[in-house]
Image (tube, rainbow, N blue to C red; front, top):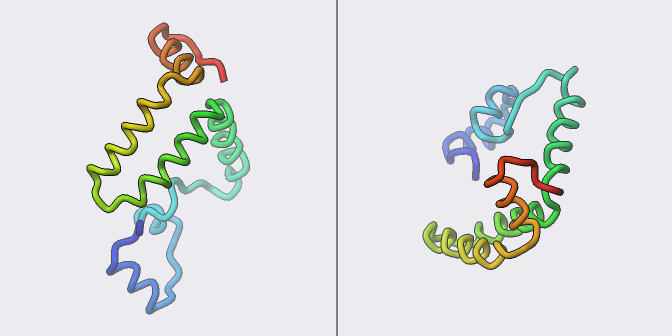
Length: 108
């Protein structure tokens, strides 16, 4: 879905390999790094995610995949809004809001 139909068909029919930069341009990857930096970059991303709320990460992933089922963008937004409102009372959400308002780091 990330690659337009014309590009996808070209890739399918030709079997041509694409470069890392092309993969980035096509939206197939989020970032391109040098091979010697791959381990460091991977650990930085993993550490950043690990610092977030487990509840928030689980909720975000679940909502992301569930909203993909909607054909209408408005329905997807409404679904996401309903879930966010339902979960705003969770302790992690309250801690995150408090941290933001008071300019401090949220607890994990």
